[in-house]
Length: 475
Ligand code: PFF
Image 1 (cartoon, rainbow, N blue to C red):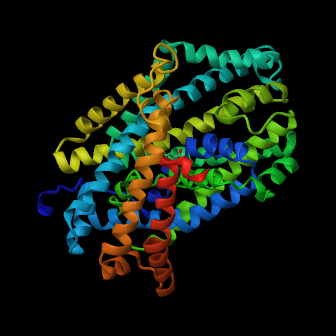
Image 2: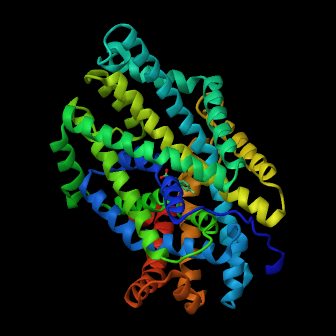
Image 3: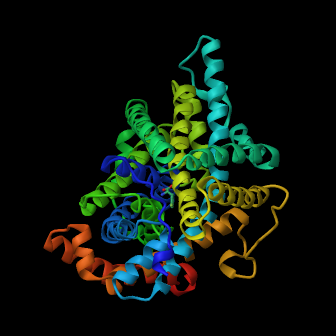
């Protein structure tokens, strides 16, 4: 069995290339759109503190576990788990969680590309407005030429009502993702990360400074870091845990796949810590970028998923330089989304190469094309198929449209399930000597990791899974 697994033979050119690509995978819509949305809805500080605890106590041990599996396995997620299982005298059946993860990555990609398409459209709107502002001789005016809140809301509704527009944006974004992944690990994924991630950080710092100068940074800091423990309900804890998994790209075998391209060296512990720290800093900086602007214009931080598409455009409309900074903001999200979507496509692509023996272009096309088609269903759910409820028979998804059903099912069922199986596999099945030798952790760090992965992760993740599926338990 093990010997038949092909290795893709590709690899990162250096440790820093791997870190950049992995941070690129982690930093995405989850940090800039989902984190501020959830923090805003959940009352700020208390959510943020629980989120940070989840990242470091549960997320970080899982990041290290996934990278370990890839590093040892040196092939796609399914083959890598099978190899670790063989070296640990465990059943090859454990590779099932690699397969579930690859399916989850494929499904997430389908709607991720649709949402990234909205971002693309907004970058276009703001870009066009910025060009108009320059030609009108007022490069520093607010965006969207003084539109009121209803007009800005109308833009979002108009976009959702147009399947053709949504499809064009989705096609463009998926095409870009496919193009990069088809070029391979070194010339595609690594190169994209090497150019895009530095650009991302420059934009992020620039926009945070803009928020600090023009916005209300004091209120934003108080909102994000002063905990009001009365807001800490079980639902808030549950969503903080789910967000930690999503943001670190856990539960989709993404880091197993990226880890398999590490050719030499250890230091996996410090590498994992860097990924978790960078991802968390970006989420917090995204909060420190968005909320000063929202508060400066006196808007509601708890607007929900439209925070970025309605609240923020309205705020940019009123701020000096709003046309330029609004444009840069949407470019920033787009850059973050691309480096994540390529990691999502790489998981099934590597599976096609490693397990099916397909060529990279063929595998990319099959999985990218498949995700594109499912994405079309998602975008039709905003207009022609607005009444379709794919899992309507299940009370949890009774009212949920196509896109939100795929988001909810992957986030509430598949990701926690894969995370749970990863924790049990590493905590209870994997060979200790192999773990110790491959990770290169010091004895105390190794002991801590083993405790977190064998005990805390399985218990906490089981709680997310069960309370996510049966919310009535909490009431
Ligand atoms: N971590 C990404 C984000 O925060 O947007 C989402 C994601 C990307 C999840 C890649 C999973 C993945 F494999």
